[in-house]
Image (cartoon, rainbow over all chains, first blue to last red; front, side, top):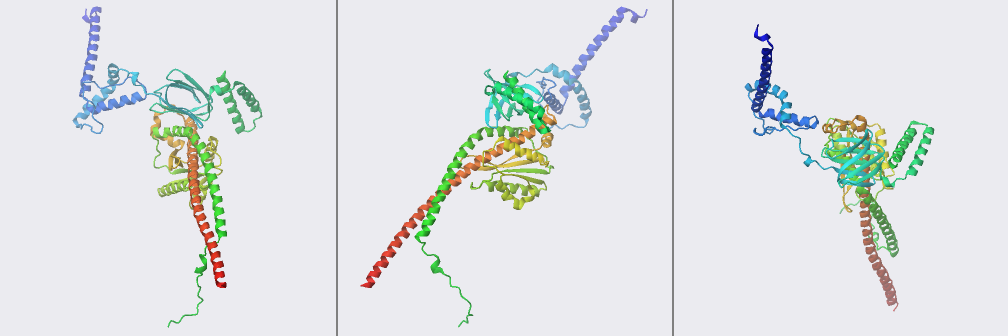
Length: 250
Length: 293
């Protein structure tokens, strides 16, 4: 009987095959490591650059740091000269590195501790009054045209337009303050400063529920009599604003 | 020796021109200068009251305006050099007697127009305030897009700024970038002509640093930009009125001081003239009496 048909031998072959695969994988990793160590500083720079890009695109929260025993990459202005003979090796290294880099990153990196989180410098103003100027707060909830969302320090930079609604500011000591805004804009910059510019803003305590309801009914009745598009838009805006006030006060 | 032609020779009446002014002339002049001093003093009081109000309103407006401009600074938005359509908004007012307010803004605008036209760009100008129109329409009339009147009588509000912005956007002039030239208030006695940038929706959208701001679609950006335009115009108006009132206060103050100086001088002249008249009469009487003896 040929030895390869027996089950035992087949298992042995399988085991052998598995071991071979394992050996091959470890060899692959070792080779990667070696090639990686021998990669020129330019490669490391490229990897760091790619890592930065990926970090800024928020795809991977891990940060890739170069292994500690290798020298830091050269300053981009002083690139190491590379001769032509290396180019093929570099191409191969680059190809393999691109495949291996994710694996390496997950092995080596840790999330950054949140202790160095930037403070949010919050400025909230209307044309006639300033409510907050460069104050550090914990969170701000804003109603925008695309929906209501809360802004914490280190929020991604964005520009939004406000709709009539309630802005809630949670300050560092835990207290919250509510304001009703009619419209305006909010800017979150890259350095975590937030500018909330409202066309009209009042603290919620200053609004009267009964008057708001009366205004809402009046606006709704005007809706029927509005003739042209401009006045219809005005009435629509007034209805929205009054509805928001009533909802905020209830 | 010399044969003179019999030309008509006009003898200058030097002897009689610089006659000592009569008491009546000096009295008239003194009265009018005193009236002027009263008027300038009251104008100074009014300007001081308006300035106090304007400065109080400027504090939140400044925070508001710098908040609106911070996006342009932080994102470092710059228009590319091949954009050709520029817009200048000059902010001033309708009323004079405020020192160099209008002329400094007009000078800055003329320099900008000359620089941009020299570089081949198209420039249009919006005048906020009638005085600017008066200063610019003769030489740069073809650059004027829009004039705003009735500025400066009442303190500017957000509604005024939005009216200006709406007219500007409706005018159909698709500017790429521009600037607003206004007088920035520094202190009671000093102001400085300053320039802040304006950008159009396309310039902001195509700027390189805008990529870091996520979740922006064209509609949101357009609304945001229009609101920012109104904010910047409002900021310029507020700063401008405060500078104007403080400049008017200073100007009227120095006018009153000059008037008091003139009154002092005229009073002295009046007394001297009066004494001279009395002395002359006395001399006439005495010499008449002496001649009789």
